[in-house]
Amino acid sequence: MLSRTDSLAGARCAMLGGALQTMDEIGGMSTSEQKTMAELPESEVTGALAQIYDEIRVYCGVPYVSSLQRHVATMPGCLEYAWAAFRPAFLDGTIPETAWQRVNMLSVAPFPPLSEAALRLMGVDRVGIGAIRNICDNFVRVSPINLLFAGCVERLINGATLGGNDSARANWPGPDMLPPMPSMIDVADCDVDIATVLMQLRTEIGGKPFVPGLYRCLAHWPGYLAHAASLIEPLLRSEEARQARVQIAEDIIAAADDIIKELPAMPEGYNPPSDAQCAAIVSAIKTYRVTSPEMVVFGTLLRNSLPQSAV
Image (cartoon, rainbow, N blue to C red; front, side):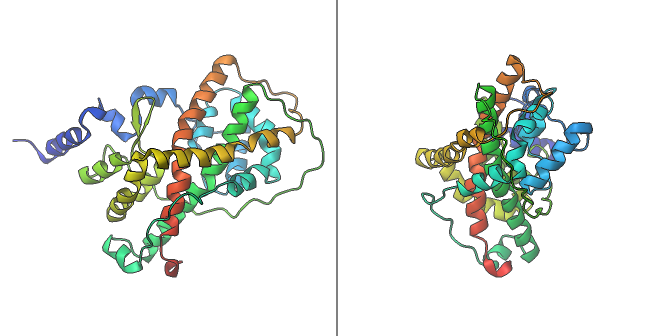
């Protein structure tokens, strides 16, 4: 007779069918991908990179450094080079403000509003509503910035030249820091029903499944996650909706050229990435460009459907 643990493991494998080959992949990335998409954790960063991490948090207004920057930080000198080039456009607010202003959701239909009573039936009390709102705020705030910053970096390493504008730039205080989010649920270790719903929201990156962080944070409220999945999954399958998200991302990234033209020349002492590093950075940017528009769109729709009475 199978134990409960064996039964759950078997159910997970059956649930995923042919989409996954190993249990390592259920958490979002296979072992080989984890090596490819290595990250320098915030708890381990030191020296100049620690200062860069601090500034990224301050000028993005979120209490963490996004995984794309943590990945680039594993390549010696690369995050230092990118930050030296574009730091002035963070310090004066150009990149964050431009990214936020260029988010155009007019073509995206809103989600139906939720009442506090409906949320209570999903297992979400007022404290939970506040936590879900903060999760959405974090992803909605940082994802447009990441899209624009990555677009600028991609252009720079593909040959764009900083404009050499040495005019004085204003000091931007940055937004108020958002509160921390709850931990991201590990898909491989959670309840089989939660894992099933999370895998409905997976995307494919390099032929492998990946569950974005927004959904894994929301999994702390399974009833709400199920509601969100019922709204989001059809939009993930819709080519029209996908094209709308692509357009939102392209509208943000298109600002990169003008930003580059207005930046001062590259400071001395920073070597550009090698050809191999450039290829790795561009590959990473394209990977994260798949999910960032989802975070912008679905984070906004979920946040806006929460009851304002609970603010």
